[in-house]
Length: 369
Ligand SMILES: [Zn+2]
Image (cartoon, rainbow, N blue to C red; front, side, top):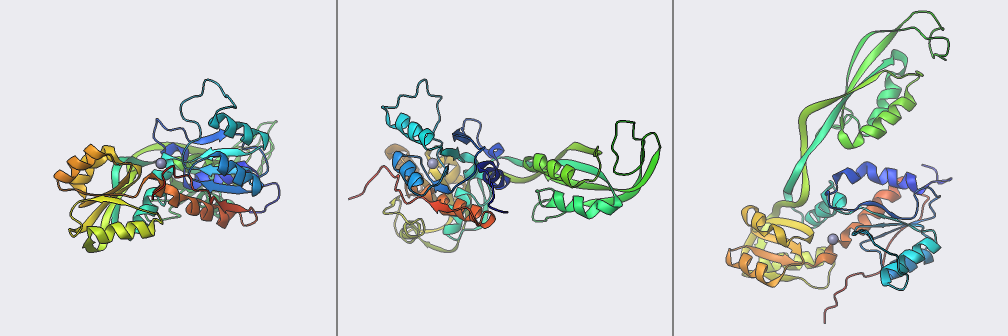
């Protein structure tokens, strides 16, 4: 992609082709938070949280797009009082034309997102979704194309997420036939003349499209299709794809002691300290990991894993879980900062000429002495 007049909207469209807002939990508030998508992007800053220090960092880096994991706005504010910390942040963002975009539970859930990063950092194998919320759904897209343009249209569909089924990409079915049409006096047909019946050798291309890719696949298909009026159908299909949801479970490459795993967590998540409960010398192998606050899912972890890695654990729940025999490792909520580098890397591959920065501001409210 060229850097000329690259809009924030272009960056976000690309980001959402990996991490669609559709995946977010219903209660969440993801997407545009402050500003506009309709301006040229000068630079991007990725962060866990949007604090005043992060906004200052964006200003000093000349980045007018902040992509954060935690939404800046959650409960609808009743007023924007610029003497409050949040009001000041929003005022500063507006003054400097900085756009804030949040990818929260969708970034937790998506393949390659926060939870996969946390699982992969520990080398977990046989990974599965810890808390399945649903399954990927599909639409069947069928389009009729003159034979000459079969490849063009297929390429457009495939490069926009159509035909991705499980571990297979670029899956399609093509059959041949005849298309018939008669343009009226208003038409500007690619083939044929007004008022004359036409027969054209066409192909019927069928692809399955993951629900979240339907809009951009159809747009790209129409763009690549030579006809003025594109004949296509979209059907619902009953079959389900991969499970999606929060957290991951998996097996360590080899059993290790709880304290060894706690140290590995500390090192791989690049954090100052971890808390853990359980017998330090206990052997652990199956792991459930959930970024952020996972204390509500201790029961599910008990059924699926020897050890549960999650943040924001509190005294009584942890005590109860320990008595039930579950080992727990709490790397803190801030461990989610692992997303900053990944999001930056993902965008940098597509936007080589847009400066993309990873925030260096530590937004962890806790200090350890
Ligand atoms: Zn979080």
